[in-house]
Amino acid sequence: MHTWWLQLERSAIRGLDAFAARFGPARTRPAHLRTGIRGENEALFFLRAHGYIVIARRWRCTEERGDLDLVAWDGDTLCFIEVKARTKRDMTPAESAVDRDKENMVRTMANAYMRRMPRDERADLLVRFDLVSVYLLSSGVECDLLRDAFPPRAPSRNRR
Image (cartoon, rainbow, N blue to C red; front, top):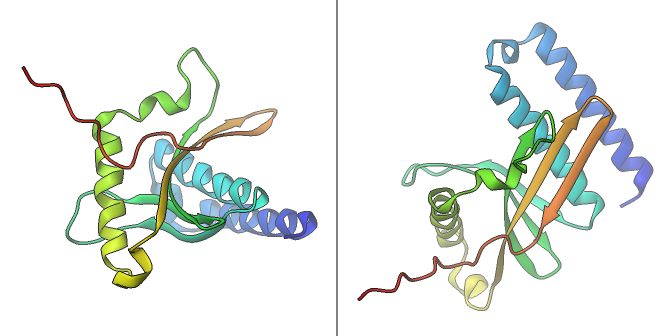
């Protein structure tokens, strides 16, 4: 996709977000939720600029707890993408907020997502879990992509 088109799209969404923040119900959201939503928007454009095709945002289902921030195709690989946004860089990187419980929730939601796909489409499906750290800084937005952030299955624990 052309860079100028992505920039135009990003500018339009930022303008609409600013309008909604000023006049819509979004201004009643807590600051951390506004940061998260803005981070997901920035991650979406970052991923699209890197060739991902985003097919779902903030995906939920009634059977499971949680949501998938972004679902996208990277070539022939279906990626479930967790986004962590911060307003500053400090000693602890944003991706450190993804612990084992969060990984398991994302895996569970990914399985729920794939159960809704036709069986023949998911038979040989390549799946990956990526993480995008978004830093919303006064100097601009910085994004870091970590492909294969965690394995599709939780590592088994050694039992004695």
